[in-house]
Length: 309
Image (cartoon, rainbow, N blue to C red; front, side):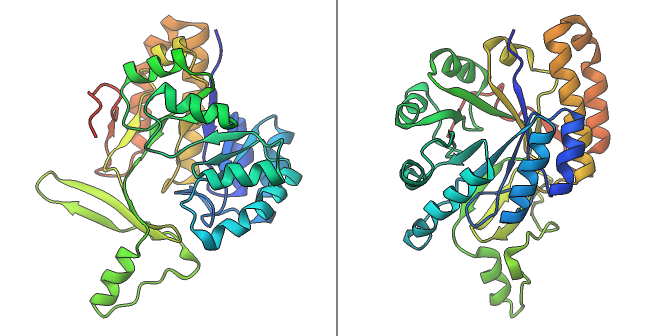
């Protein structure tokens, strides 16, 4: 039985070693100038250092280039891709065809992972981009378990899914928070486009708090709960899903390391000793719940719901 890759999003270069020791097989990093909703900001020097550390520990590094690019950014793609190839990045995550075209010119040997976050909802789309050069498709978060398994059965490329963390519910390229502050006659400190981690939209009727932040890519509203399917991995592993992603956006390094270690153990047990995996499910859930921020519950996202857009 194939063991799926455990993919984690570190917050800084310092996270690479402890996360690899906790069981991470691969990392997604980058800078928000080119990538969407990253757990941390990685300069070019950080990228080179992260790749060096990860490779030293037998892990891979994928660099995010899945932002929404306008003409003023397209001219920069070739140079960044050349840098990533020279630095030894294992793959680039893209959504915009402009990245694929630039990679053909400047990094023809670079492995490409297709990720638009929303439109990877059937195997035909995955295979279309596979025939254009992508080696992996990152499925939409809104798919249920049956849809994921069906796509994997018919896919010509690797399949990646998110198994843990918050998900994006809304994005606008506009500076909605900054504009709101300006309307109130206040100033919002987004110098360097640093994420504001303490802002929420509060739904009093449902008692939900939706994290909201603004960066160079615009305004992002995140889910009120964290997806967690550490106790529902059997069908996905049996189906041969290639990569399980833990999204660490707006999470601490300590949280990520502890959750990564639990998923590593869960994946290993699910493959080697299914009975032991079943016996330990409740313990993992209890441990993760103890790490959760107040009023931020765990759920299974869309995995067991009818897919509705």
